[in-house]
Image 1 (spheres, rainbow, N blue to C red):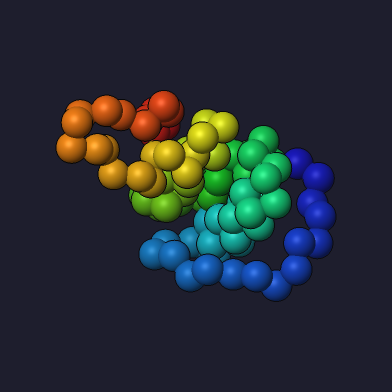
Image 2: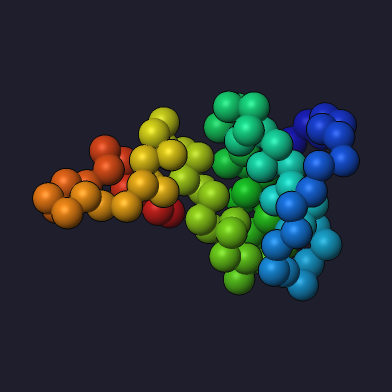
Length: 87
């Protein structure tokens, strides 16, 4: 994967791996920039570095065009968000 200098933004996550932290940060920046493909690639690299990285798994929701809907609670009527696949 080509590296682009995405700046110093970082959000501390629970991991023992510096590489997992680095790739998570890069993925989060790409996610905020709506480049979901690049975000997914970065989150996968974070998981390669630390398979127990919970946020790496959770943020793979970027693969869904409606990833924000996943964070929305299920309505009392039982309706589900239009994309609820967490991989």
